[in-house]
Length: 87
Length: 177
Image (cartoon, rainbow over all chains, first blue to last red; front, top):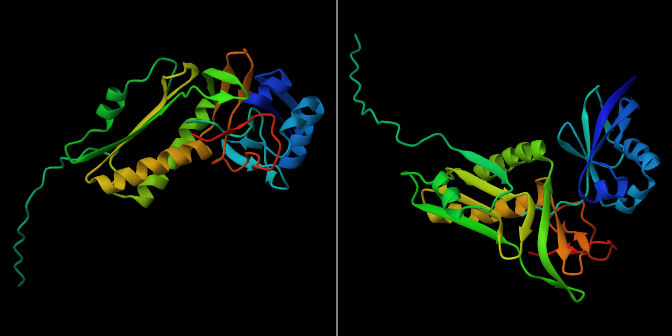
């Protein structure tokens, strides 16, 4: 199964990708967060600068980059989340 | 036959429903507004924290301001979890209000104002400390320092579990507010 998702880029990841958001089509689901991150790296190699210092947010839940599986549906938001610096 | 007489005293519900609000604003923040939104006749204490933009010197460059951005819909859901956590630890906490800047914040201006009301001060004082620590660890907001050289760098909170460690290299610097 595949899904079409909206990827949101924040802070440093937006600068590295040059985008605030984009549509990603035919994303396999379920997919590990590591593979999902891999797809984004393929599209925007400069994101590698965040390797080890980034998590994703799927359905507004943080997901560490690893073997955790996420299930995606059409229209879901996936956010690239660099280290937080609120407050 | 039982005859039960129940003496009851009807106590009017004077305390309001507990409130929790986080507001993101591009305008300067009003401490009074935040304080007013948590005040309650059942509370003897309002604990307040104000985070201000510091004129830091980094490698000979002076900070002139901060640029904030946020994943706004997720700010709400993470703040909700934060408040649940606060209420679980300190059940007497009554109202919680956080106002946080978005966009450009000049040195000297407040970037975050938070207030927590409680019947007595002990719980409120502990809760407000926890609130700012947890906000820095979990609420999806980011800031970029802008220097007088017109360079900029994204800050990282040491509270955030995916920030680089002190020995890992990051092209950005640690935030130690």
